[in-house]
Image (cartoon, helix red, strand yellow):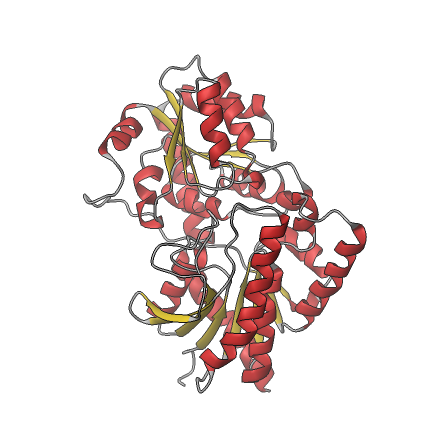
Length: 417
């Protein structure tokens, strides 16, 4: 191996065709000359059903972008959510990852095991076993906090159970030689369970939004016309309980007096049926439920929007998080309407990229949408330009891929000495 060319075993419960930032990061790493093999499960997020073309049973292998080997272990899909279904999903990935990943990695040469750690953190357990089998260092990228997220979502409320999970988290972190955290606020939280000397801030990143949109698109022309002919503020991403979609619905109700304003919700999730019910029950003609589209179609929505909404529930753990969509919103160069607390709000304010309201504050979110609506086109453009500049400096994909490779190489070199 030439210096700087890494062979990375990536372990993640979520990967393409599910829509996560790790997909783009893998593409960027490969484009920069590194070799990546992915060890993951069968795609079923966010709707809880195995994607068409896949089966829940049986291990499988395929190529991502024709070059990246993807090894898939069977798992039980999330189903409609709920504690029992999620627990089964989490446990099935651990069990089947332990069974299949070592066999799928047999005879292969890697420099490092890299864990993309969203919930559940238990997805790192197969990586730990893979690390021991390969006798290679393990690096974790922590994008969600355990056990705090379990408590915040109400998934687990028993203090003794949370304490036991805290011990498991401490053990998982002890197996990683380097722990990268997605926000600066995570450093203090993760330090409760890990050696602070292991921690380094490494934010989420995003592919740069193209300035010229392709003519071919899956988005219906009627929806594109709606985006072009109205003052549309767009929410793109998972529509689940964490996203406080109730706040968006209540804000839309307060904006009925602005006939050209539309709230366009792009995505799907556990709250999608509720949103459809509320749209009909409250007669919310100003809410458009666009449905889910692949990541490649997101620029069609982001570049046509007058503003981009990010929302989360009011919670200490969410205040410590920078939602991944903030990076893609900044890239799009459109004003951001942030209905969030803490680190995410700080990023938007520091960038001068939009208007911020406290999490779950319906009145202030509606007021900010109305304020944005009343701004001149020049003021909105200036806000978007500040967003783009901040993105290019802090979160641009290729720059962050190079930084990741440097961190991995530094850790490998330390272990070699």
